[in-house]
Length: 306
Image: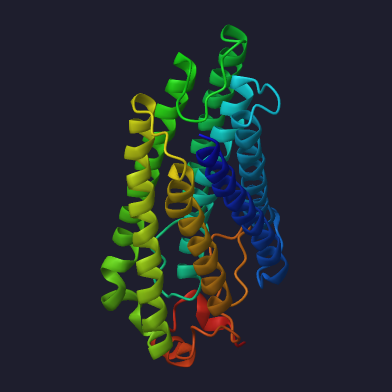
């Protein structure tokens, strides 16, 4: 038992270190960002920073609880464990907005109204957090003396919250994948290829496709795992290390990476009041911009060099 507890502690210390690095990466990504530092960009990185730090705190409490260093309130332990998951889902939804914005930044054909999409994402997030606030308050008020558990929810409200998390994982993953596929990838060759017809852009598209599909699979599998852990107690010491590494740290890190890559290659993308960014002469994805201007003389980008 002592050896198992030691391994458990080491595995969670490793997770604490990885989430701390993820928090640092969010700060570095923000500082190196070539996009204008508007409210959306600030909030995008801030959500990732807070979620990562809170996750590190949560795993620190896990160790304290398992080692019986002091008594941890069960409701507080559950709150610090579940809340980062929803923050990461918010990050995931914002990554959807940024990826679509960046994809469209240098394209002649604008498949998506960014203002409408932004409104839908904001409303969905607000509704989720209102529901969560109500459920967490009810959990604290009606079940004030819940025992601390690092494996399973211990009250009916905690079970409901975990079911909501699983549902949102599933819906977000499927929506993210289908939306991008229908609005961009499915019509890439016949609508968008002229704007980015370079060997570099082809390789980049393949890499971004792989990362987005991998993220979709991770969140889909996590939806199933989240439901299972409500009823099944998986008590082996390396469970959290494998679970959070595969289904949270790696996909979130890759999403942050690909968003940064897209922003860098697309140039100075602005996510503000204007629905789309114009093509600019410094964009690395617009080597054929002169050809496009000649071909699409009536498009909005035809005046960029005037």
